[in-house]
Image 1: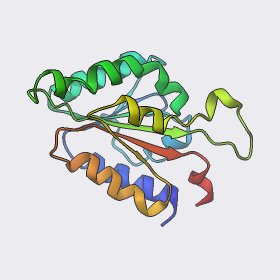
Image 2: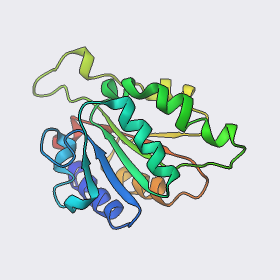
Image 3: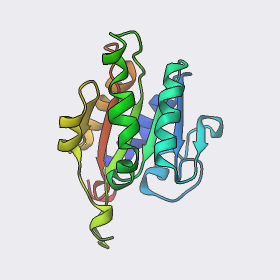
Image 4: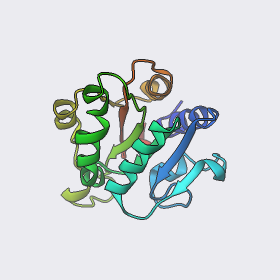
Length: 178
């Protein structure tokens, strides 16, 4: 299957779990390439939010502590940077500071912005995968280079029992190229 088709398949798989909820910008309405992968998801699973990245990540952590598995969508790494405090100081550290007492599971979906056919300039195409791997002690960061990596990565993120959250990194250009 193609990259975009695998993303649709993975999102449909996640949506079948009663604990999942998808939240972010352009989740319940069109606006990004990621929106296209959510078209078949029931509207009651989609929570559209304004551009409030830190609030979104805090909500995601709170939802996870309440038993949900939030799929928190940030269309580009550059937007996710605005949620670093919530990710690095809160979500990542909760399992550590609570000695495993709190293990919120959040699936963070982000991407390296598309450069083709139009380059949106450097504030939209960052790849901070390696930096987040260094900053996060309990969150796994998985970069999706090939279509066949997509479904297993999201399946692992949902089904993992090790108390870890997951950041899944997509390539915007691959939605239409692979």
